[in-house]
Amino acid sequence: MRRAASGRPFAYVGHTADMHAVLVALALLHGVVMRGPTTPVCQVGTPCSEPAVGIVLVFSRSGTVVARSRTGTGGRYAIRLRPGIYTVQLSVRPRIGSGLQPHTITVPRLGGRRDFAIDTGIR
Image 1 (cartoon, rainbow, N blue to C red):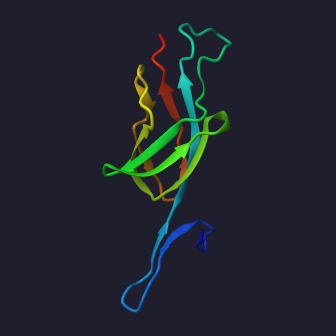
Image 2 (image 1 turned 180 degrees about the vertical axis):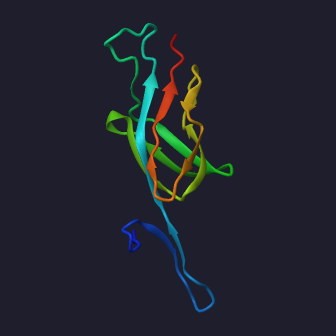
């Protein structure tokens, strides 16, 4: 992958005598996905949520899926996206609970951290 002078990767569309190059900087979005509650009754001193390891986040713009990211150890994910507004869903919809929060995110030009939570529906 090529990198811009700033060190950030960019997409490059070639050029011919009739076409100009188009550079698109990609922003690094990263964070942690947690799921919970994990027990019907939460107790003081005992975690009531846990990292969501191995789930797939699906990022869409204008109704089109543009990227997917699988969480790793500790529920961490990282993905490079163009700045803008995205709808985020789980690749597999949970049967209970309200699912992933937030549903819509804005990726800033410089990227950043965005954590997600999955409601398990356990009450």
